[in-house]
Image (cartoon, rainbow, N blue to C red; front, side, top):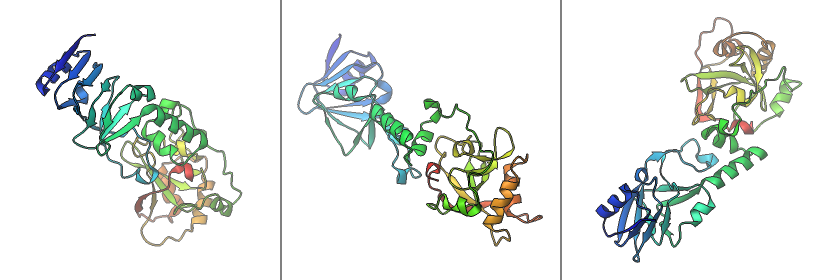
Length: 302
């Protein structure tokens, strides 16, 4: 293992650029950017205190999302460890920073380190993924937000074809209404999921885990499960299912809309034309609009 003792930032930068195996820091403070970290092995402080300032680019957080903060989430500064070991140093950052370790073993390899917790947030990817898998297995309401954010096909979920129901599992409109009452959406109302292409897919809410809409694979009106309805949404808007509707009063009741939607099963038509047909009288040219700007509860909880 080749090693070097550095006493200032210039010497430190040179050692980093040469990817010296062991960089021993005899000065008070040194700065390391994440872009320069790949290939380094050990950085060690020789005097007390020696401060290591970490910087990184803004990117998507590696932490499982807090349900109530998911919609408002912003990118975070992040430093990915890349197998580097740091020893006998105080670790801080100019701004809040996620310090990302692959697993507990990698985290434990940082010996004698004091973290400035006002700036540094430790993230251990192994723990985050384990938590996600537990959430998926037990169907916690956080799981859809997290899995959509980190791309479900990594777990083999999006590669599986979702099946749609031949008919509603509910015996009546009232039974469909009783299936879920935890959100401000009603059975028979219009919902929309924003797709990566920039427009919405529309459907009629049919109760718990039922959305009457046009299947994107067959172009036929079917009862879709939530994964099928969300097909084509982006990683960061996969849970942004909006309440949609039309301005002004409507002659059709939500119950009538639900009944009409079920009567259209098997029809080939555009999803926007479908929901307009279900909710509006013939000749009514009102445009679909957002009822409010708040996303619904996560679909796994519907």
